[in-house]
Length: 452
Ligand SMILES: *[C@@H]1O[C@H](CO)[C@@H](O)[C@H](O)[C@H]1NC(C)=O
Ligand SMILES: *[C@@H]1O[C@H](CO)[C@@H](O)[C@H](O)[C@H]1NC(C)=O
Image (cartoon, rainbow, N blue to C red; front, side):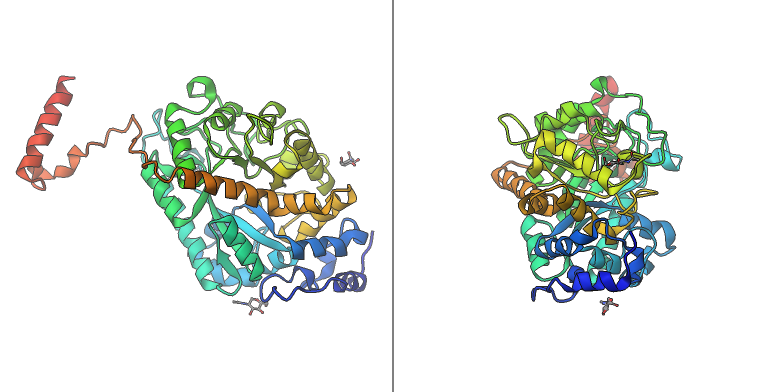
């Protein structure tokens, strides 16, 4: 239906701005751009959707903004001042405001090494630049936060998100997509956690030393990857990683993983798990979507994991022949029919996909999704949960597990296939950098190693 700018603005004017919203969150204020860009899906529910967005935080668990900044700018930091004006891709601050976005996990990632012609080798040991790429992405997010103190607020906990919302700022969180970004190291993970990373996707579209991927990501044929690990799930080293993630209060993200990795991770995780951007395989058969037997492991029942599935918006995963907001909600409702309405949420994959569904083309269109939920009779408390309440509860449970494990020491484990430790090669020419007693030890260790 055709909506005039006037009718839309008057619909928006019905809602009142809570005084708590100072600078960032005018979701309830008139649209700033040409309103014809946004056509409400259910115009009679437009005002109500805005009310809910003003009342409850909407949190998106997966936006690949750092990747876009790095993709198009020679100096990625040059993107930062543009973010409050307009920026290519699905996200910039004006559109996020218009869409009522309250919190976003900006993803730090490096492409899988194979994507830029690198072969990590059969033991995942060949050097790559993944750690540098991840650190540069984190640096980009931190500098963006520093540039916009009145609009954005760094968040690491559920309370931080609530605080940002009450201050009318966009809560910015960080996740790591893919354990290839750890370069086989738990030390790297611990440092990322200190920098603010709050979820780790166990794989992206490649297998790692920790876990098996399902492949089939955006831009691929959609086929699964041939297995490399026995059982095509988590490796023993990956189980060590899960314990460390639990101890650090970093969420275990199962989007992109093989089904067996998901089952293994659920069995070994002491904390709720998450899928930061996936749909339901029963609704659309794609390896990036979660199958029912895995969904049945999630919920409030005895022995179930209290995790959450955050629904993706990529047309290819939703339904390429009917890529609409209604179809996204089909995924959410199917997932909810198995895990419960209190274990679902939203994770767009904006900036990491070539096309979002019609009606949810970018971050400014979130009201349409709320309208579809209202249209289907979801109660306010349930919608509040989908928007972010369920995720905040999961984050609190993960934080609680961290607290319970506070006396557990960090894992000293190193990847068993590493050959660079002990670091015998660090002694320099004729071991000139080593004290005599250290030389003795190195000589003895080398002798023992050569005898083996
Ligand atoms: C962001 O953009 C808004 C709207 O143009 C403007 O009012 C505000 O001053 C800008 N803030 C910053 C920090 O650039
Ligand atoms: C698209 O999906 C929606 C939601 O299930 C459904 O109502 C509609 O009929 C579908 N349209 C087509 C063309 O299949």
